[in-house]
Image 1: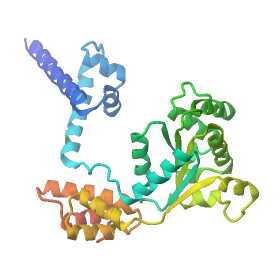
Image 2 (image 1 turned 60 degrees about the vertical axis):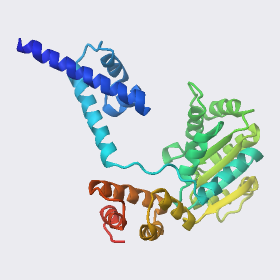
Image 3 (image 1 turned 90 degrees about the horizontal axis):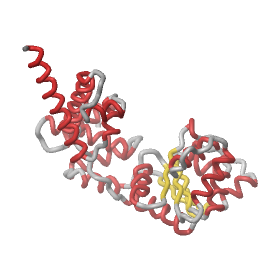
Image 4 (image 1 turned 120 degrees about the horizontal axis):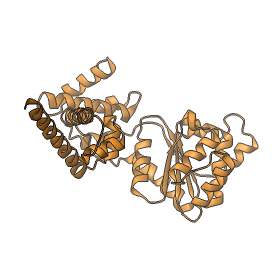
Length: 317
């Protein structure tokens, strides 16, 4: 009799878990594939569990989903949401360069210090517009074949080849006639042969091209100290250059306003933005400060910001 009761309780608990998972999918914009990935389950196991057809250890699956639901609830309670994307003066400056590259079918270069909002601006621009493809280069994806393969994936080319020549032809076919824009973030990782391939790709297909990164992007495009004819040919194709050397005061004010900060807090955030990392440091600090404020059931204020700086950096502000 006790075994029957335990089985019924387990089935009831699993039914509650299924209902909770369905509620997340239906109301919070999550997908089952995301839930499977975040909970450490295979997509098949989750699907079969949700359909009550899983032949494996259902209690193990249920335990992982309960843990995922608890962690999700904890994040929602403890980690306040940052304000929506803030369209700062720097964002508009970056978007202007991107729009010009696409409309004029030319090359723009955007370079500057880290933490001034370049990457977030690129992501938002790409999300809001059709035929804008954004890829991020890294040391492992900086070779010619790897860069083209990353682009092929972004373009949705199925079963993309791995040889550079075949990749280049496939990418060209996909880009022709699109009037699109290709944006390369962290382009400072690219060497001359890859930059030259991208230049030719842009000219062949009539798309816009934006190269974005730190000061090394501009240095590489000018050939550094060499100024040889190869780099001169590449540099001459750049129609618009945007240098973002430091965080603008107006940017900090706009972000402070989005967080609903008072004058004392805004002055403190302005000091913080002048440190290395700039707006990225501000974002991390304000999110932790908001956690402190929520935990104390108080409005976010100067005390919480100073505590967050101390916690994150080990120094006082």
